[in-house]
Image (cartoon, rainbow, N blue to C red; front, side):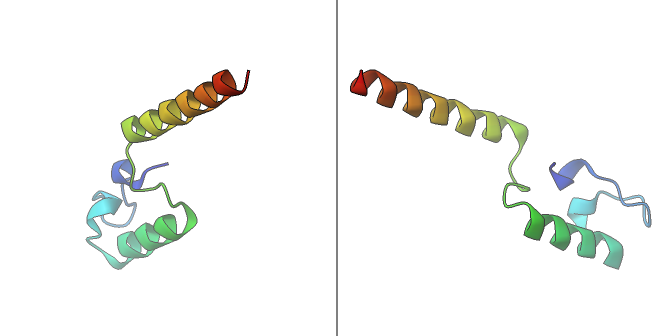
Amino acid sequence: MTYDRLVCANCAAPVSEGRCPVCRANRERLQQENHFAGLNPVTLIALLAILIAAVALLAHQTA
């Protein structure tokens, strides 16, 4: 999950802005837990498509 869409229950601001200590703490926690937290879904889909294409190319070359 990306944290750019999360809203803080403490200050009602986006967590990605880090306006209050609760936002900043949760933003740090999410960044440490998930290395892909800063990537948007379009980037993740593009990376997945590249990975599938690379596997398909490798399978085609070995066959």
